[in-house]
Amino acid sequence: MVEFFQTKLDRLFVDYSKVLEQRAMMLKPSGDLISVSTINGDTEWFPFRANMRIVELKREIGEKLGLKVEQQRLIYNDKNLKGDARLSDYNIGCNANISLIMPLYCIPEHLDHVVFDLSWEFPAVNPDFLDATCMAFEKDEFIQVIDWTHSSNEYYLNGSIKHSEKNLTGPGAKTGHQTIHVHLKRVPGKITHLYFTLSSWRSPNLSEFRNPSLKFYEASSENVNLCETTFGHALSSQAVIMCSAVRAGTKWQIFECGAGSLVAGNAKCYNPIRARIAELIDNEL
Image (cartoon, one colour):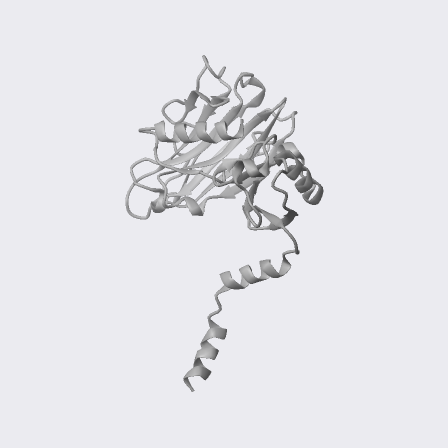
């Protein structure tokens, strides 16, 4: 009788993580393989060759997913895989899993004035707010920060990036947001990376705030959202690197910062955030 009811309970309370794992193994082709997974968990399998160059793997990913090589970032053990290296250079073996990060949006060249709108729900009890920040880099060298206390910069950034300076809310509002306006055509040519972060002001982490999110739109079409992403996974962290805008020739691409996006630091002390961003950029160079 005990075994009968145990069987019933096992059917009612299925461990779906094991089900998904078993399903993935059932779908896995035969032979020596590696898997490539996107942030949302979609996985593709590719033949494994230890001497395969990263750029060759990117070409195979491109053929299967219709994604250009230059639009791909491959991450393994928190390291960005560089195109001229081989799988063996990163100790990537058979059955390893590589993370694929794709652009959230490729900004057309005709777009100039764009807006990053970072929002959150205020804590129910403790009065606090989040700080939206843009950090400009020339490769891995920090150039300038734009936030609510440094709302613009003419010398280094030609006034191309402007912060709203305050929380955009109405009386009794439960949701706060700050906007960062970027005039892309005025961004000095030496600036290669713009990183957008959210950090708590007083709280030790973001768990006091619900639903931190990012919206991105053209200034003249506020209601047409070009891309959006949320960051529920970041609540245990003091700050989150939300996304980056990376210059690719004359164009800009927006990437979600999947690997290594959780970090210490805030507007009172940006040093940990700056250091982590420099590491992320250095890995991709």
